[in-house]
Amino acid sequence: MPVRLAIPEVDAVGPFKRLSASQVNAYASCPRLWYYEKVRRFKMPQIPVLFVGRAVEEAFCRMLQESPALLVASAAADTLSNIPLDDSGVPSRESTSPWPADRLLPLPTHMWPNEMSALRTWAQERLAVHLPRALEAMETEWEKDERKAGEWSSVDPERCMKMCLNGLEMHLKEVERCMDAEGGPHLDDWRQGARPEWPSPDGRGYHLALRHPLAQQGPVTLLEAWEIARPWFVDPNAGKFAMNAIHPEHWFQGEYDLVYRWDGRINIVDLKASVGAGDRSGDYVEQLRMYAMLWWVTHDKKEQVDQLEIWYLGADAIKQIEVPTIPEMESMETELNALWQRLKGTIPAMDECPPSPAPMRGFSPGGVPSEAPTTSRCDRCDWNAICPGGKGDEDLPDGGSVHLPGTPTSFDLTPMAQLEPRMTLIAEVFSVMGGGEGKRPKIRVVQGSHFANIQLLVDAHQDGEPAWPQDIRKGDRVKLAGVVPSANYKGELQLKVDPHAIIVPAGENEDNDTSLLDFRARWNVAGKLVYRFEKKGVGRNGKAWHRKGMMLIDQTGSMKIEGWAADWGHQFDLAEVGDTLVAANISLDAWAVDVKGQINRNSKVQITERVVRGD
Ligand code: SF4
Image (tube, rainbow, N blue to C red):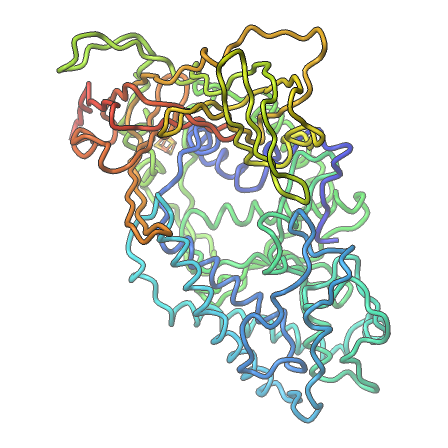
């Protein structure tokens, strides 16, 4: 099975603490790099090429999902989009809504392609329908990304189309093989309407009531081979990360790109919208070996993968990866579990993740091993300017106090790990308005003569408990655990409920001294500048908006600080990566484990130490 979902009753790990192949590879390339990106949550510059790969993959999978027996070449791109999904974004097994392919009457058979050239032309035209839309969606996403870098004009749609066409040719070879194999061992089952537990996405549900609506009689037809050879892939309409294969003990997960299985063998394919030259090609080999282990483990260690391939669409080349043996997979599982314990059990400190980059590996187009470059991994690392392995040092701010020019008093600085954006208190429910039928109520609480509005941003706590008692009513005494306080522009107190906060009935004898007045509105921090970011847009009211922000690191943590562009002083623009900055009088916000600072017009941002560069 290409998918193995988490079993909530026994999943003690949770979706955020699972190990993935990309994390393993990041750690192997440099433990400090892993630490910066996974613990400190630094986000690398988001260049267009990162988005192009997703667009190519999406266009390719949408084409694979379709059938020339149902859609003419010029059909709308979203003809098969409206599939029923469950709450987690997985194609629904329960829904009684019709599936989009079931609503389409097959085209007359004389319109079905019966030659490879006609099938190819149809598929090429479908790619021409899907790719521009996928690129446009990615451009919008890139535009909105606060870490966007580079220029979208560097994206060459023709090159993207060439990569899709290369992928198509690779897939058509499978269709041809399926024809040559007379449909393979499952032809009759397929014609009878049998479906695997996780069918290849084709706009139909998990079960067919009768024979397959496109089944023919006699020797396999080209159209049937197109349907049968279709690999499994994540339905392009499913939720993000919804269809992982998760280790039975829940500590590792992966999402396969394509799984071919029509001939009874399992071939896992990783799609790469690149030529495959350069160091990262080494990561892809390791990734596929981990996937082979994951397949084996998620099949009770009774079924192995037969083939592993990387399709380098930019080089029009397929790279075969040697399938690991059972002893190799056994030791891989043991090693990965030990790594998971080390990285996810208790979060390692920065000095436990040394700046020790692995040597660079050499690959030429198609992922062919070649001589390794003589450059160091640090030379092109995004964190070179602040990392001791690059041009930075370990000397990071750690609280204390500071005197800023133009201010009469000094500011006490809080180390980032000690910032406390949450509070837990007991209060009385003053009013409950609305709610029910899937809507969140408006709740107001009172403590003595002080009021606060509850901002419910989620329906459930991360543990799955409802975020508030469903029968909550005026006069109830409730515990507000881990809520995030803030003051709105009118000075009213708000208590935000995110996945880490919950409202529960307070026990009869339960007490808590925390008062609404204990809310601390202003904080001061100091850190080294890791990067700046900004976002612009136009609001629903037609007004342009512009926000800016920065990522700071200190000895104990890191945080984003953001605010309206007009509230940042000129010191923000003058700062260079590696400079030490103080942000005084900022407020705090939080979402799950992320703590964020907010600049407002009373805040002060000051460079207190300039980075010294040796070159
Ligand atoms: S600069 Fe070098 S040592 Fe530092 S994170 Fe990057 S690769 Fe690792």
